[in-house]
Length: 433
Image (cartoon, rainbow, N blue to C red; front, side):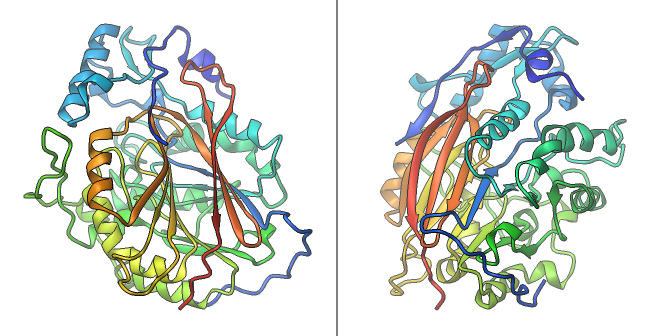
């Protein structure tokens, strides 16, 4: 067992920020025996987390060398803040920690802190399963040993160590996983090696890069539909983000070039959207939850062109047939709805909730200037909650006809406590057309 987070990363810890930036298979799934429930009893209770795989033992050379003093590390983050067109007077550096191996300061990891916080939270509330929303292995995903590190070691330390005992949280507890862009960074063979590991190593669960699954605890009333959005986006046109000095969008001029091994390689990958629509229509579940790595709406001001492409590809299907979309990618905690008016004009559909939970390891700020411009030009978007430079996760409770989303954080000082920061309820959409 690895040393605690306090021993590994927070001795000594210099906390330079406790700050925040916030805005308030194709065949139908088999039938499962219905579970008798009392009124108000959850149908399913899910931990929702993503982007947890940032581990200081696997930093890139450019993050370690040359070693930076605390002042130099803060100044580097300030420069990046200004380059990203964020308000200068809101600058808040992330938590920084001194690496014993170099003496330099780097961004601290909340990987073990958030895992411990989820475990603690589940000692007081029901937790039937979890979803892990990609970027499970940083910074370059599995490498097949190309960087001198055996992937078995990487998987053990980054995947299994934090979550080894999560299977004890409930009968049949599983962590339903998807891949993110970092998991695909090195090669297709390496990424599929991670898939095989997650398919065969409890408490994780995968069934290929896109799949559908009914968590046993739901008694057939909840079905989760998992997409690989890195492959999905590699099959379409995505522009590079560009912002003006006031944080507003500039017309894009450059196209993102995906790694060749991320492009759809077969018919199933090329027809992922069609598979999703067919699967959602066929599903007999009461709740239909779709997960992927990339969000539909982005609040950090650095991934909004990907979000636009995601909306173009997925929103018509999600608006018609899904109850909720869950994503990571942004290292933030966010709760939004989309009215679906732009995606399905004239259909008068209920708003689609979207949850972003990518704050399980590495801090990233929001961009309040960008958010204000986005809100003004996008009346279909409602943001209920958004917070950056934070460690935490979401807890999603599905009852018969309502969903309760709870935002849970753990302090940036590494103390390891937990706090419930926000709760939002949504009615079940029941949108099948």
